Length: 376
Ligand code: SF4
Image (tube, rainbow, N blue to C red; front, top):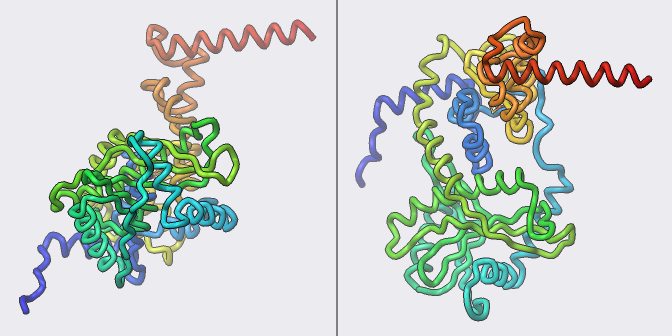
């Protein structure tokens, strides 16, 4: 038997450094598609990139900092989601295949003969290998196949992340389609844009992972249009729509490339920095603040550290706390104090379009207030 491949010295050093950052007794938290998608949604945040790359439990870190996250699905929502998914996949996936057939505009009758390979195996590595084999066999067979909860592996920051889409459908022409089943409603054919965006980013992660398998599978191609299945108009009946994830895939891919450089972010940290939840809140606060963040209100729905980062952004008077669009409109003005001073004519160049707009807005506000006082 040949000896296992030896790890590169650089990889060993990085692994040790990341273990120090997590804390010696803390097991790495595996990355999932949701975390990778959230990372892609805020590509400017080095803090999240480092913490996720090092496998830090951000929920435990937030609690140790005194800002626990009110984050995640309630038990009721979780159970409702599971029941809806079971309904969509019932009867060997008949309804799911009908929805896919209809949404993709495939001519003829919905496929009746759909294979459903057994994907059980020991551990995530075994399941990922079993999934890859099933995908190859299904593609070679030239028929329809429905893979229920396949396991995919994607290398992130030098170690594999294991990802589990709701389903993957193999078409007779060798196309693989990711299926995401969500419990938010599709009303009159459209859903909450933010939720669809999050689902698209999550699906893009699965597409990237599937592409690794497709590269070594003859005749396979990963579709960039994914099938999103949701309850129809608050009922329990499923409805489907097709979402093109090419843009999200490109952003996620770029982000993952950045993630592989977490050694650069880690190297810039002061000696001895650790995010071990056993440390005091003061030590953790210093450690967290030593990595730059890019807070935006969207973090509240996507990151366990959101309350901490929001408090820091507000304390610093950073305009980021008001939202990305407001931040974008304010140009070079980065603090709320600076914005108020510019609006009062105390700071800034009146020829600057941002300052001019603020002065005009302040004048209109004063005029409106004067009018409302006069009416009393
Ligand atoms: S909450 Fe903080 S750490 Fe998380 S993504 Fe936002 S800025 Fe980054």
